Image (tube, rainbow, N blue to C red; front, side, top):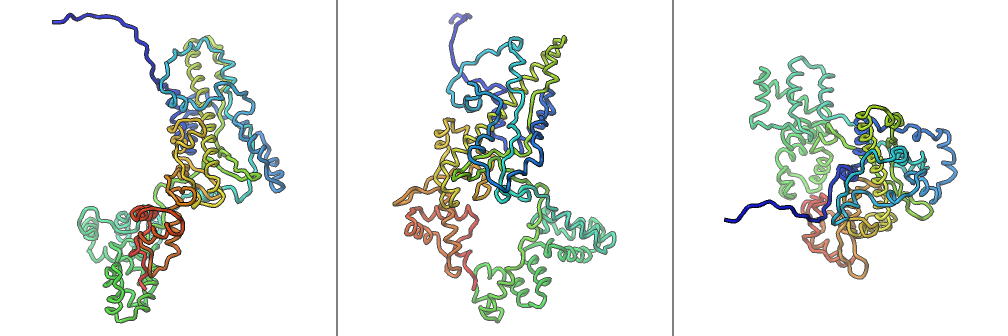
Length: 516
């Protein structure tokens, strides 16, 4: 039996330490514009040493903001000068570095350093250096057509349920009819159909619950189906289309017969059989199909749900003097500064109070610094994307370049994980529209005789071919593959065409074929 003994040994090792400050920096980097606004509000509530800097937000008079807007656009130098994050702050080795998150990730190992004693810090100088997160109150003059419309960002549509309930309350119904209608409307899904999750006849179940005859409930359901949107509350597609056909085309008996009896045959493209069964020509059947195309198979989809997210672009790209300039969208973003009141509290006599203030001041300074470095990192990544995708900015999606995270990371000297976090949940407003920043990263598709293409650019070419095809003889996936090879020099397999087509929500050639 071996002896058991204790011993001491000295071992030197390196490891990465995820401090709370580093975790905060990583979390802020991944947040969208709306999330960062919410985080700032929460920090203002939790940390008394942080306060909103209202002075920097209102130091430009309103009448000065409009001067020269119509006269000229700002020069490139002016735009770049206005993008300075802290005009009064000299560059130090700390601020010249990349974000704390990227610095930590790019290090394969880092020896943890002991924290300095808070009493050894020169708090007046330390806090003064990061007293305020501001941009000098600059105003970037933009043409009205270059700025995204606020109507595209904010939307508060009424839900289908509320719309139907409002109509029921406005109708001349008795108390029992309102109760039955309310119960039925509560079982209508977002697409406008009456759902039945319990497996029983819903009409019969409502009749039993409210003590009404089945015929009475069916009559109320018929009234609901004639509300706006017409056809809502139907139990299947056939009933939905029949209600709309009766409402919009009451004289078209053949249309109602087509929907009621031959809907499945029509889906299988049995044109001649359906025309023969109805006793009409294929031209007349084509007219009926066009009428049916005016009906809405999902009457509820024109209404918003309970939650409607809206987009605020984090970055805007403008063309100034033949150059594309990245402008961080900080409109309405809360400015922060360290509270002067609590700075003075450091000189108090209460030791516990001083320790509390020191901790809160440190957290406030780090939060402001992390916000600044987040903005700087977003700007670096955005400028690199703009540099790579200049042809897209000029001509559109068909000219997207193949781009991966490594390309941008190498260009700006950061880790791929940093670029991935920066581009998550963020949007860029470009002359071609508003796009997620992830949109600009695409796999590479080889093209003979010229440069390679991005997969998104190939999708746009496929979409263009389908839009220009003959509806009576739509292109097959193999036909699209052959067309890409012959006209564009792009070699992709038929299954790749099918995958891209499905990703764009486009049906197969048989589904796209016109009936007549």
